[in-house]
Amino acid sequence: MILKYNSKILYIIPFCILPISIRAFFNLNLSIFIHLITILLLSLITPNSFEFIFLQMIAGFLVMLTKKNISKMENLFIAAAKITITYIITFSLLTLIREGSLEQISLYTFYLFFFSGILTTLFVHPLIFFFEKLLNLTSDISLLELSDTNTPILRLLSQKAPGTLQHVLTVANIAEESAVAIGANSLLVRIGSIYHDIGKIKHSKYFIENQQNIINPHKKLSPKKSAKIILEHVSIGVKLAKKYHLPDSVTDFIRTHHGNSIVYYFYEKQKKIYPNIKVDKKQFQYSGPKPFSKETVIVMIADSIEAASKSIKNPSTKDLENLVENIIEKQKIENQFSNADITLKEIEKVKQVLKKKLRNIYHTRIV
Image 1 (tube, rainbow, N blue to C red):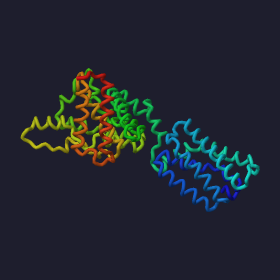
Image 2: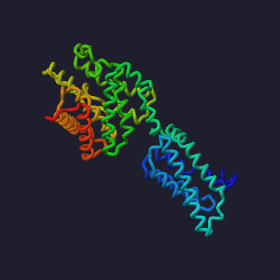
Image 3: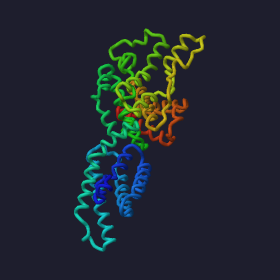
Image 4: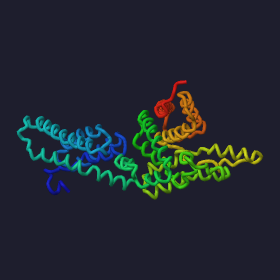
């Protein structure tokens, strides 16, 4: 459309807006590939194709190698400024090589580059929002909005299950540090941690972190009934996630944070009460699925360890280290990590971070 109207204003189009938007969702390799294909295809219809390809490749590669997180306006302005400066310098050098001087350069061309940078700044966020809705993706911008503890679902969690809210915030802090240590998406891990237990809103008193100053209601229930209530918090959480329009990437943490593990306390209690009757494990087992990414594995580990650490009175450093080792080893034996692309080396790094964070939380004595 621009070429039909006036080919001289071609460079007012913010071509770099596409790789910036793709980079917000995916890795560097994919954004480079899409940018190259787009520029090469467009070069078939643009005048002076070599100049067009060279300018767009240099500017595009520069901006893609900058910070991925453009949820902050500061980073977006810096990216737009880099694009504008790169266009001006590259265009000037091409003109100098071709003409032998800079006298042929018109200020009008520089104005086009400047307005292209402005348009990039104005339209990146709307384009990212469009991609989110069209392709069912989740950007850092949307995740940051969910980090606000005043969202309706987190306000409800605060009112109905205040102990659970404190639990998920602690899990978020220790899981985020673990994600940073192994190069996982730390923001996604933090948000997934915050929302992974929203299903406890419905039967909050049946979870130990919400039982301050009340009699444990499980004492009046059979092990099967107790297990059923505990297991249901996952499916309830998924329903609440749909009701409050949480992204699928966040809902995945709700589904996977227990994998297909067993509620061992009530399972063993059932066997003790009925020693001569074979107990059906499925009645005490989460339906899964198992974690399928580094991020969901981290939240599963951090959730289990944080919850278990509350059961130790006056823990020493050794107690906490043993706790971390035992829980992760148990999850390995249960093959809870078998669907995720996390390595043993990365799990070891996660262990070290969790041990350090727990020591800081409990200010443990050395024994």
